[in-house]
Amino acid sequence: MKRIAAILLFACVVLLLQRPIYAEAHTFKAENGHFTLDGKPFQVISGEMHYARIPRAYWRDRMRMAKAMGLNTITTYVFWNVHEPKPGVYDFSGNNDVVEFIREAQQEGLYVILRPGPYACAEWEFGGFPSWLLKDHSTVVRSSDPKFIEPARRWILRLGKELAPLQIGNGGPIILVQVENEYGSFDKDHAYMEQIRHMLVDAGFTKSQLYTADGPEEVPNGSLPELPAAINFGPGESQKGFAYLKKLRPDGPFMNSEYWDGWFDHWGAPHAKTDAQQQAADIDWTLRQGYSISLYMFHGGTSFGWMNGANSNGKNYEPDVTSYDYDSPLDESGRPTAKYFLFRDTIAKATGITPPPVPQVAPAITIPFFTLTQSASLWDNLPKPTHSEQPLSMEDLDQAYGYIFYRTTLKGLVSGDLVLDQLHDYARIYIDGKLVGTLDRRLNQNSLPLNITAKNARLDILIENTGRVNFTKVMRGERKGITKEVTLAGKPVTGWDIYPLPMIAPDKLTHSNKACIGPCFYRATFNVDKPADTFLDTSAFTKGEVWLNGHALGRVWNIGPQKTLYVPGTWLKSGANEVVVFDLEGAPGRSLQGLDHPILNGAIKK
Image (cartoon, rainbow, N blue to C red):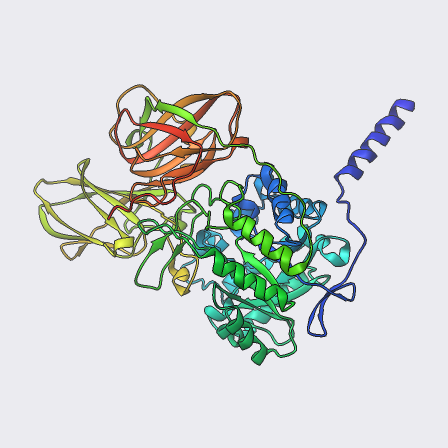
């Protein structure tokens, strides 16, 4: 009996330890022209950082840096696509454990602004939407279309089970919850916005303050009359932005929900650099008015793997790089910049509050050159195809990211333009195994002249999803691969074998010492004595993806500006580490090295 009692006691202790431990309940409201905490005026001084862009082991370090800069709050989006990769299949584990992220914020003495969407933007793949929403070609995202609203509602209700208990009225740190995101820049359907608000209420988000966020001029389109309207803008726009908001909402409260203290980079475009002095002046002015602010970003982090987004106005296509450094106060690897110390001093002077000391950060390490001697050809590792008379997109085949490969046989001799109607996004075209050209949506390319002089020539088209658009109504058609049809000399090309290439586990491929040219995987191991952050110099490679010890680090593209990939020290092992590189233009003998600094402003290749 004593043993049974001891076991039961142990089980009870374990259960108690697993339960969230919350502080006492408080109130946070918008009243009398400002925000109040337990009835007293409260100025929100926040900075944005996204759990999915930071290795879990570093969450708390980043939060302590936020506290040390003088912030009292952090802001985060919730990215639907990392949590529901397939309909009804949820993941809140590992780096997706947003509950733990928010608990740690509370433990570090920070409040939380939650941005659950369901739309995020954030230069994140498809604005945080899961790609499977596009499998039904008639679905209209960010609208009252039931084919969108029903899965969105199911998701928000599921999210509420995780996060509603963490609201301030329940003893948690969440003080503000945003309804949708900058909807006024997208449309003006207030009935849709009310649907999203009701989803959040039904999910239990009633013990914190709901609000909307838009550009100042878009507030009439995207706001709801019963909720506070916060505004988003960049450097030099503070006074004008708040003056505009006061005309619309004279009774307040007044909050700059995104102050753009940096900017993001596109492949093939110069690295963004912003004016820290102007930003510090804007922050100082805002705080001295008593207004609230959230810096976008405090710490940008990394869009690991395939998760970068893209911009498009319907005519162009601008995919984002893997790094989300954003020229933010805390750089991509969590190190304080000159901007960090400038902002820290600005906040301290404006508030009269001395922040905690700035934590020390371990230095980054270098890794000597090592050559990737083992390889595996993509052509030797193709999966079983799906046959279809017409091309199918990734979404049609339940694929989210990576590459997709199309193969067919041309029946006769032909000369004319090969046209890929709505190519998304980057294609390499082969005839009988020989590369004959590339097409790049970024450059508005969709056709290639061909002269087929042999009967039964094999046509191969290898296409990369370079990142779904995360902004504007272009999102609604962001299926990947060949999204309409293929024609050659004006006639449809049919009879396709289609190979999904999500590249989920390239480390499991059989590599050999045989030389490989063209689309190839390259593998090597290197040793590390004491793991610490480093920056993998990828300048020897052309276009592809890199994995380290099973973690997808991000993309490689020699057009710049990004030339290194951030390697978190927590993903390295003492001793042997394995790296795999996929390169569309592979060649034997290429090498990598680890630098103690990033190269984000490399030369642009046209």
